[in-house]
Length: 96
Image (cartoon, rainbow, N blue to C red; front, side, top):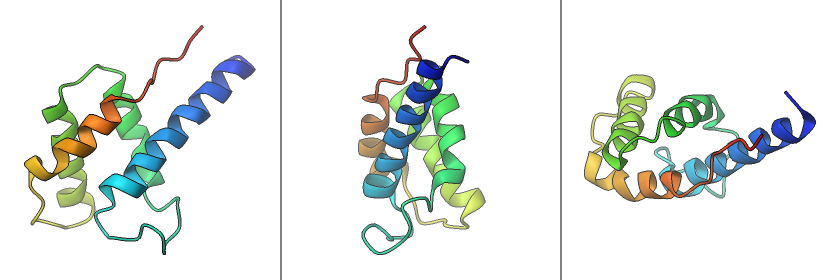
């Protein structure tokens, strides 16, 4: 991968990190916890976004992460739709 593509991929990952940290933040660490707390989920979200999913598909993936990886069962898809919208608004295209 070219240096430009690598840098672009890092920029996209940083954008996803910001949304996960500031807008999703299921364990309420924004401002007091490490900014890389949700980094293990960036790849899953990045891959999903590259498929041009619906907002409901993105919200369902966030819900799945909360339930299966974090053990939270109180999350609701409707509450995750605004986060899905922010993720879908990111320009995730790797320009060649």
